[in-house]
Amino acid sequence: MTDRERVAQGCRILDEARPGWRVAINPDTLDIGDPFQCILGQLYGTFERGLEALDLSSRWAAEAGFANDPGVNDDEALTTAWLEVEGIR
Image (tube, rainbow, N blue to C red; front, side, top):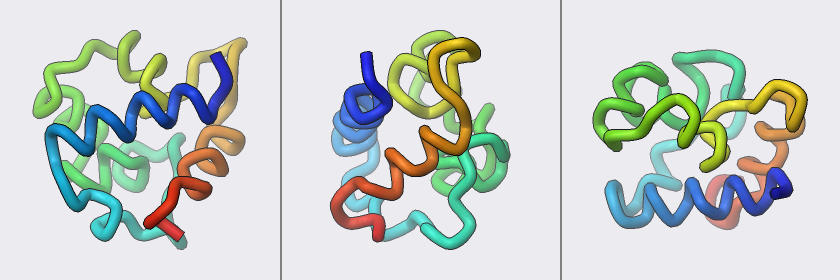
């Protein structure tokens, strides 16, 4: 699965759980590798709180593009994929 496909899954999850989430993301500070500035960190305060709020495991979070999956993708590429989502930038 590509980074864009993972991010699309993450978008679907957020569209259902938190409509309007795109306007709450600061693209200038977005960093998937930072637990406070990643997508979930910006929306829920920390990556871990976001996982809890969405009832996601760490493994599913990687599959949905909320975290990198070592050996599959990296923070920079995943951050770029999120920045390409319509409505964020």
